[in-house]
Figure 1 (cartoon, helix red, strand yellow):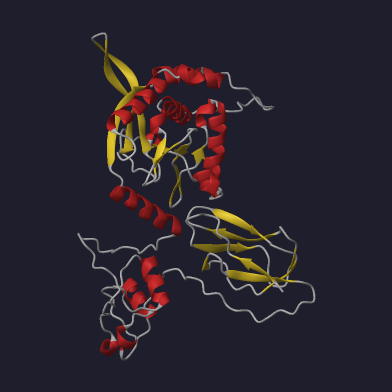
Figure 2 (cartoon, helix red, strand yellow):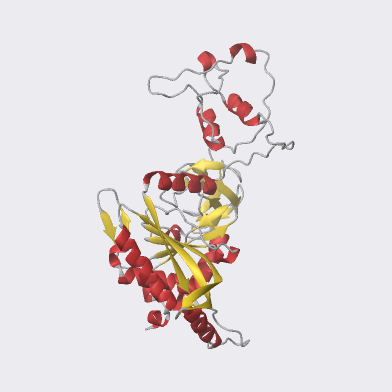
Length: 404
């Protein structure tokens, strides 16, 4: 019997995967463990290896096809084993705003569908898939099939209809279909905002001491053979370490909400938002409270590079109890962020800005960084959130405490 090559589940939330690239072709000899193809999920790109030795045949999913988890996409035959006729896979096609072919009886047969007792509207599976990908509901789509059943051509017709320009926008707009990452971000953050009771706490952190110590540490960094520094600490490295140290000092805030319980963690795993094309990832620095600033710097550099290439493993972006979102490099002074479930907090970090502050009754120019902590009130109350943010500010303003 041939060995099945299936589309594996590489992420707990994964339902489908896109075949990004085949590295073999029909009739190629393969060895177990050899690279067969690459898939793209909503969060990463993964390489899939051969499950056995033999000849690759019956490739049923072309590059670009989106297929369900567990579906067979090829077979591996032993030498001399007869190949069966291929059964074409049924990938979920991307939504394309195309104009349907004219149908003489369309106006006469198209009717608005009536919902069944379960509340579902009669539609073909492909029509449902296209409507879901296009972000539209079936309720107001006129079905052209028997008894008003909605077909794929009906959904395409709705997606292809232009919307009248508004406010003098004579150019209209471009319809950009949602990819898996954007859809996941939309679903998770909508769920977060609708179900998590957010509250916000804000402090200004003085960066005077941090800037001095950062300059000293970077000047003393070891050099490689080309006499270049092996590492260079960023302010974000200090922020990650300070947040982990604060969670260690205030362990009751190092938690996640689990509906029937609160999970309190022993290590301080800090997620860091990384902007990528079309969305963002939050790779997690594990046990950041135990790592040096240089270790955090090197780890984040590697995680951010692979995040932008969509090469992170699920274990590298799942879990954690908090997130840091730093928009300071874009000149943003202050903002609030939406909690990334199941985390209980997220810290929004603004740019360091020069401001006059009172010192001994006199105005003194200092560089300050505004940070806003969003808390899940189900797991972290106001006083606890205030303790966490105060501890964070203390570590930022006296960074030597993190080096002890």
